[in-house]
Image 1 (tube, one colour):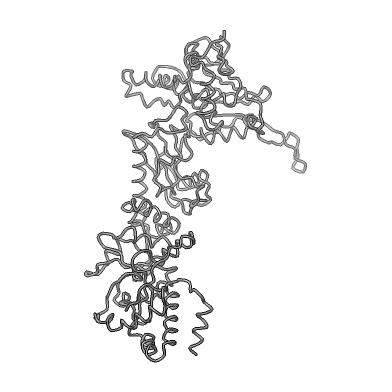
Image 2 (tube, rainbow, N blue to C red):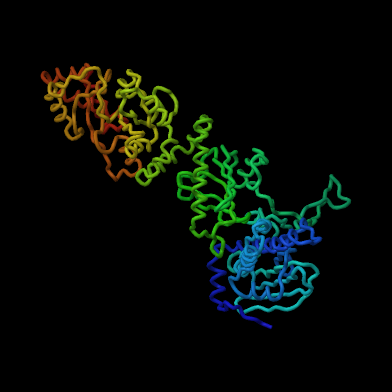
Length: 630
């Protein structure tokens, strides 16, 4: 007799099939999860009651009936009675597994037995995902402890039938009649082939703890075949698809480095071993197992919009999300790995997380674990950390700058910069620890390379006094000082743009004495420079440029490279070494040959541009000008 669903509108079933699940392939995960639930229930009975049941004989068998276009999932679990069939499958979104778990929690002595059973399915919802790929679904089941078997059958929202049938053993067979292909080639027929089904089991159900088997073709030599003239035939043998015991559920001491490396390379599309492994097993308000990897090299497309960060999320061994971004902060999104928790609140499709306290708690704990691992590498495995920093240092800096430096406190101690005195990469903390007693600033210089910065005339005085300088060579480094302002109450000061005076004596009258010359230079160069003044930085070089307040030259270069139309330009402050012969020649020419003096101004300005790594406005005119002095 035809019966109607209690949630009986076709629209509701259509919505569940077409909207709740984003990928058709998810159906097999749901059906296998339900089979695992059924086995768990019977296994619980076997463990808690006196039975002769073989608890090692539980299995899930997939069958491809290609002739009749049926995909069959069979289990030897607890089975269902006629009443349970109607209740579990006749009411959309009814959860038999949920009710079983609830009854278990309410039972006397439940605290001693709760861990013996693990329910991951929501039978009433997950079951209906089968209609995404099947136009008819038949369920044949026999419940443990009963003699009768029953058949449930439905072609969709029109309803279902239940009748008695024959079944020799306890358990359930889900028979899905696979739809014919539509306009998309192989849209449904792929589920009638062994290899696509195998891939789905490996992707979503690899860690179901009961064996999942299917007959798979294997080529063998025909009887009587020879090596000179080999002939093969195809023989089908049962093959277990799933690993059953996840690597992350084993104790770290029981897993070899080779096993970790192989797992990482197979699961995260990398052919190099990971740099480091982080594991966690937590039991408490929220329980979970985590296994994370710090890559040796930057993942493909890491700095592109196509990159998907996040960890693989499992619920009791069933893959829920391929890239759960909520489990990792942006600054650690290079970490790959898996998290497996039975405690997360999932929506009815199990494809999306409810944003709840448990998820946030796991994410916060994982961030602490990653941070602790990086701190350990930095202190105890410096070479390894520096190798890591080559690949991911720029990412850490960008994240430290993001949102106006909101992550500064979390990330500043992980940043490295080249030191003028140590001749290697150092942390900000190491720099501050070595500062001279009377030193007030963290000095830095920005440029295209270590070699270019090392030759800058502005660094001479600091080097002579053995004051350490941090070399900023990445185009994002300049923004670090601008955003951070200070570290451990020590302000950053640019060697190039800062107004510092470390000479033994300073004649306060210099700017007054040479005021006329400075005004002459400003008039000769016009709007090419904003200010002309005597330098407190130069020792053997005649001239340099600084930018004063606002954006720096390195920022100007960065913005020009990103978008030349922005027109972002730093101020030009021309600083002169009044003790240099070039300045003395200018002084003399100003009174004797004004045209020659103007030419010297142009030469000095262009030299300052070259030293600052800025383009000369007209190289041809500059070379002609130089030649005019001969």
